[in-house]
Image (cartoon, rainbow, N blue to C red; front, side, top):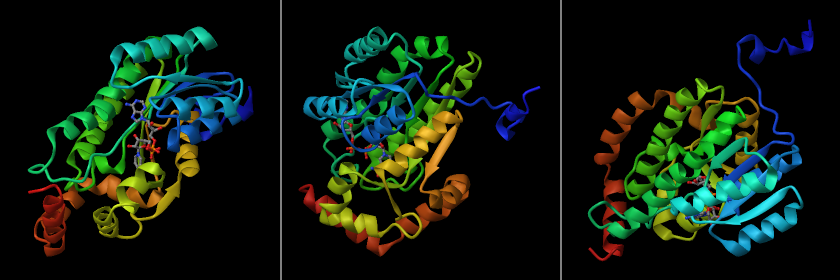
Amino acid sequence: MDITALTPSNLLGRRSFDVRDKVVLITGAGQGIGLALAEILIDRGAFVALVDIDEIAVKTAAQRLGSRALAIVADVRDRGAMADATQLAVDYFGRLDVVVANAGVTPKPATVRTMDPADFDRVMAINLEGCFNTVHPALDHIVAAEGHVVVVSSCASFAPGMAGSPYMMSKAAVEQFGRALRVELAAAGASAGIAYFGVVDTEMTHAMLDQDDLGRELDELLPWPLNVRISAAHAATVIADGIARRAARTIAPSGWEPYALLRGLVNVVLDAQLAGSGKVKDLLDRVERRSGR
Ligand SMILES: NC(=O)c1ccc[n+]([C@@H]2O[C@H](COP(=O)([O-])OP(=O)(O)OC[C@H]3O[C@@H](n4cnc5c(N)ncnc54)[C@H](O)[C@@H]3O)[C@@H](O)[C@H]2O)c1
């Protein structure tokens, strides 16, 4: 008997996943969390197909990462292009073991009343349909390889949604997509997990929270420890470690964990409190005035 195999995970029947010489496709890999994840997985011995709509960013990134990286320019909203991207990765590397649906965008801050419906459509098309368009064409390959799927949701999937509801809605839907995949793929010997993050120090956060007056105020509404920022490298390491243990869910920073677990109860109280808050009302008035209403 190999006693080194008697790890807690194995004793509990949980299988680990070694990315060495496996092929991983990551969307939104031109910068931020996706790029940091590509770097870490290549360091751990994987081959990575980096998919992004930003041609210069993704080609520059793949060139820097060397022969284990392949750049694919595609828009996750385009179902045909994503099927082609999957096939390109399979043809180039010979297999596909893991897919990470990471590409995502935020809407312009707006209430539902003042929102441009086109912005609603854009966010849902990228964050939600894009997630489906990424995962669906990969699934036959993932099942054949007994591989793993990661969908990148967010703590926004259960945090208050005011002034950014399309993002919150899309991430809540991605969470449900991930839960369905987890159960469906288990029957086929593969696995899936959901990645949740609080605030990560990337371009998305700089544009949304730092370079916008109202964004900065929204950021200030977050109490400690929810306002703790982690780096893209930290977030990516959490995803990579989650793949290694086929985690059903990962959450970072860890200060969000109690809220994530108790959200049913916390949100009943929190939503009532926010709906009665003068500070929130004032902030939303200014969001609405800025969008011309
Ligand atoms: N930054 C945060 O605080 C935070 C928190 C929780 C969850 N997330 C999620 O993590 C993921 C990565 O976010 P990030 O912070 O690295 O963002 P980012 O803006 O730094 O990077 C996003 C990448 O996605 C690409 N992209 C955008 N639209 C695309 C499209 N239509 N098709 C293909 N690629 C497209 C962009 O070109 C960019 O390279 C997103 O899903 C985001 O919602 C981020």
